[in-house]
Length: 137
Image (cartoon, rainbow, N blue to C red; front, top):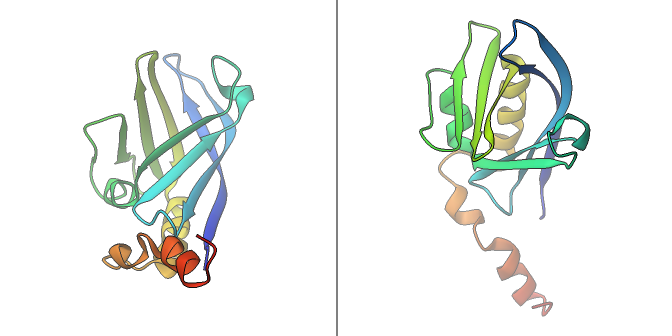
């Protein structure tokens, strides 16, 4: 029961200049890690030429659709009715991207069908328990 959800999304990199440029990214969710969401960016858009993955709480992404959320490395906030802004903070600086809110909502809906809100604790350790049951551990 290893349920994985990937959704390709188009993000707009927000620069200090007035222009933005579109880039691909992937939102990733797996039932085996039910509290987390990952967002992956390809190497061609990173400063050092390597792919970059960020992990953060699914609840943070959901809350950020309605009001500013997050105080740490990842922050999410609405930007009008059709866009959501995500900020990724690191020692090297801050990257800001803008996504279609409809893409985020669709991704979250799929993740909540796989693991309903509030039922995450039941999925923690499920893979290990199944492996032990079938003698694979």
